[in-house]
Image (cartoon, rainbow, N blue to C red; front, top):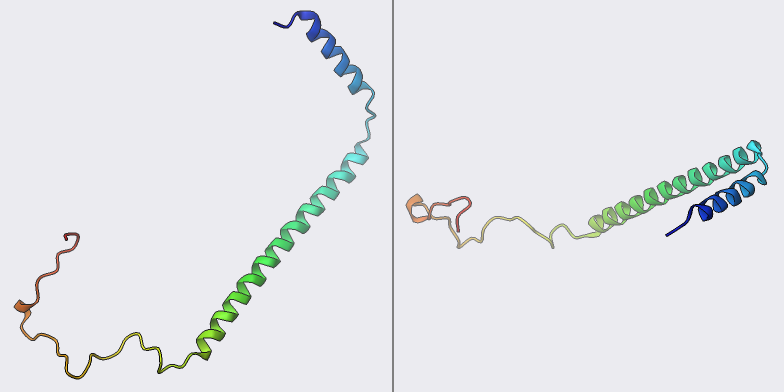
Length: 100
């Protein structure tokens, strides 16, 4: 498909292009340190933002729980006065774990 001449010409063209690029390691170091600084700043901002969201959510939840009337929302309470638990253990069917 590609003859040998095309590959060699492309290689020569890329080598000529690479030879024209000046070597400046200081520029790379400066750019690299700038990239690292930006990345570090992004991570710090993200961590602070996540912490703020977490603290605000916890604060709102605690505030909402504190505002609730403790007598209005009873989750567990004693059974009604007219309801009694069965006294005969044979009257209650056995519970079988894992079976319908």
